Image (cartoon, rainbow, N blue to C red; front, side):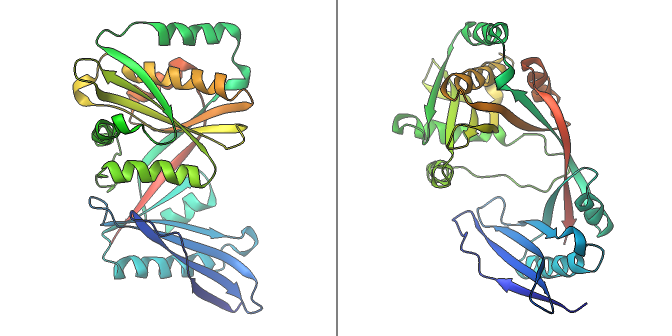
Length: 296
């Protein structure tokens, strides 16, 4: 079968990086598959690229994926990358393809979902009890969209709470957050029409943010929302702040988006602390995902 792979122009460039794209076609110009390589640019991740390869089911095992992979890996080397990471759901063709092509499995994730539309009055009362329980020296705050100006500096500093998040053997680097990046991330969510809600804990002794959790909801307030980062600074751990914030995030989602079906989270299997929080709050595992890595 004739096979042509063409590089495409991708306008999705940001200060954090840019994407390279390829389209595989047959001799008649019919699309067979595609590949996207995200080349990270920010300090701390400028050694890394993220790969996604998609091949039409009818065209698999015919060399299309291998050809797309070869193009992407060559481009990663040209850009001086040290590692290429690629996600795949466990047990899927993508899982088997990456393993066969020399990628090694470096991280296992469990996806879990909380069905908001099934929360009973008793469950909501339990959430209220968690949120209303005093945490001496701390208070909860929340906001929609970009962080308020009076909190932006301390919120940017609080992002280091994610630096020691369990990533197993992934060569993920350390994401360096500053005010510009914090505001750009919130703007990116708004630009695609989604709604970002952040719940944070403030240390009342100095007004600094001790931890945060983020939830992104579709713009129409329907279907499922997605938890993004949840983290507590090391010096504030051991006080139940993660569970406190996540419970408040759920409660806000239920009250502000009554048509939202559920909220979804993904957690590294090795992150036993956060998995215990999710289990206690009623999240139900749905599937496993894997992160593969190719060392260049």
